[in-house]
Picture 1: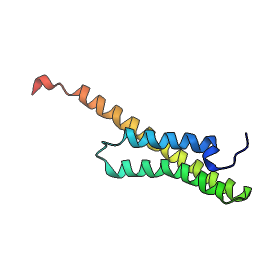
Picture 2: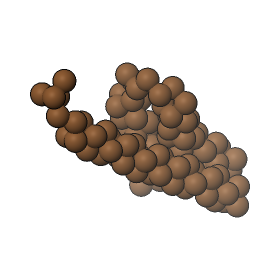
Picture 3: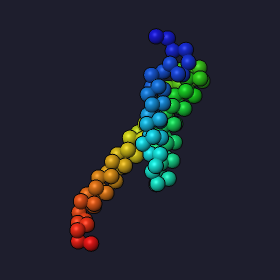
Length: 101
């Protein structure tokens, strides 16, 4: 399959799905700094893939893909932190015995 536009790139398609999933998952998150940062990082994956493709040189495309890869790591890191925070909250809630209040 010949890639004629950035929307044909499978990595861009997956980044778009990830971005939509991130926006849906964190839409009610009250930690606005965290929410904004993870959303920006997810959007950055799609945008850097698209921008690099439109530069029309393999060297520039490769550089933008490296930037997108860094944004992938940022999203993974933040999801790991989020998972740990949720686990801490659950452990705390299990620790407290509400019958004592």
